[in-house]
Image: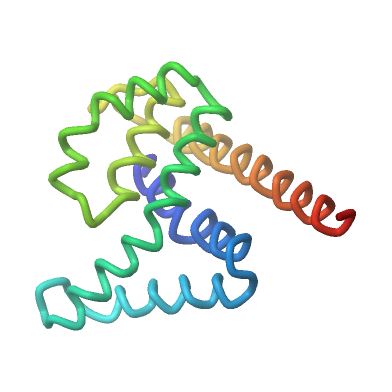
Length: 152
């Protein structure tokens, strides 16, 4: 459940917000359309589906790393960096799924969890807390960039 919180946070929050900041409303629509295309079928079903999976992963890659950095800032920084370092080899195996590696490794490290630590409901609540704090940092930065652009 904790891994799901971290991996879905990119698909549902951070990537949409990232592409909104980069390309405006059309960026958010672009990412959401890529997400819907990826969910249409199983990978390896067709060449189009494989391209859709890779395109979605390409769009999710920068926001996944920035969200992982946000998890480090919102939780245990050293633990998150250690989690990213230790998960490097498994991320290479899952190259086209950045959220499965980066966010889970950074999120678990930010909470101080080992790879096979048992989790309970309170741990899921702590994971949601890290996600919400990271989202608060992102919204603050969006407001700051908006004000800086407005003032210039």
